[in-house]
Length: 188
Image 1 (tube, rainbow, N blue to C red):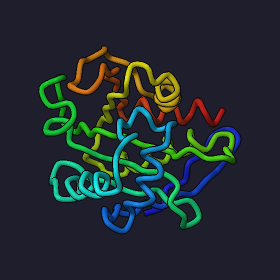
Image 2 (cartoon, helix red, strand yellow; image 1 turned 60 degrees about the horizontal axis):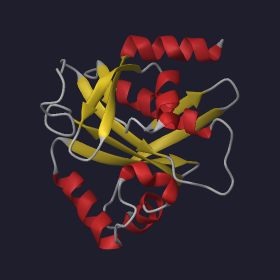
Image 3 (tube, rainbow, N blue to C red; image 1 turned 180 degrees about the horizontal axis):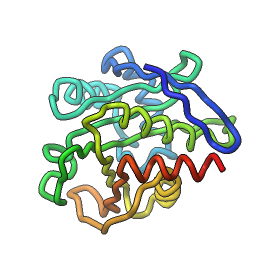
């Protein structure tokens, strides 16, 4: 599936494919254990831990993981989940059409200005391609200021801080309309 992301400075086309827990584990391991991925809490994970974690995701009917490809090369990770059953179960008031999301752009020695914003834009566009998706909910660590800014740029509105077992999180949501409004504002 192709998604084109447009920011004021770049137009990038991404494709998505299901993550293969065994084939992609080594790549994911390098991404998830990098110090810049600290908020994923897998810094000390072994290769087998990553394989096991993503085999569990693949076997779970309430979540899945996708690799985002840029020019056919893996460029980011996207996780989609049902917040009624995973991550936010019992921590917020779900609405029909809610979808939970995580994304990770790996650290690089050659950063490209606007790339991460293009990624989150593509992730959101991909999620909203499903007509059943009415709202995307996220729960990043309250200390992850960089992702809060990215979330705001694509239309997320913070709701409140929540305490999860592993972290204090900022519950935020973005409706289809909020995303479309943010995209229009970006293109001006």
